[in-house]
Length: 208
Image (cartoon, rainbow, N blue to C red; front, side, top):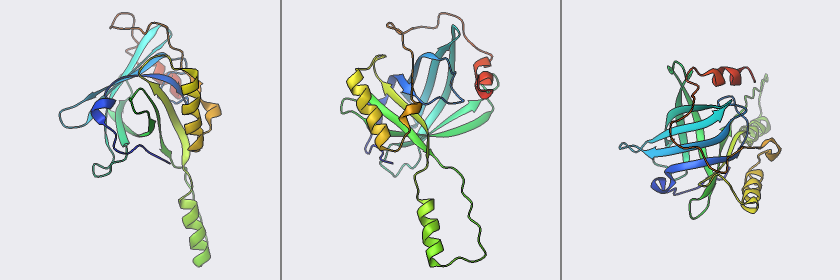
């Protein structure tokens, strides 16, 4: 899987709008105006604030992103959140790989590997068996998570299609992409009701 090298983290900071994504259990199924705001911390990690609106209520979760390998120049990050939202005590860590970003840092494709388990059992293994196992181990991981982000809450269709093609070229099943509804005028501020009890998270776990 190709990953951006030499990502300028400071330029990457700020607000990004979710244009499309694969549905996942940690986001409301009916979320609208979904966005992420990244802020660089003094220690080099990144504060992550994910926000969306579901059933008329604002939903948010905060976390921390950091380089998976500080010595590697690839844009492979880890993001840590604490769940459940109403009692954040359990750490959950996921991959956040920047697969593509334009030169002006205006739109990006985010993904990450999710390896499925594989067991191979045998009484004896010869050299050919070992070679086959090695090939299976290096096979493409399951592409379970995908996001298309933009600095603006609307993205030109031609650019969107180009980003979708890039994801497809990396082995993603783009038929699973779900476009995120975005209002003409993005909601701002802290006004309006909020889901502080994490009801959305429980519903997501139940597939609702």
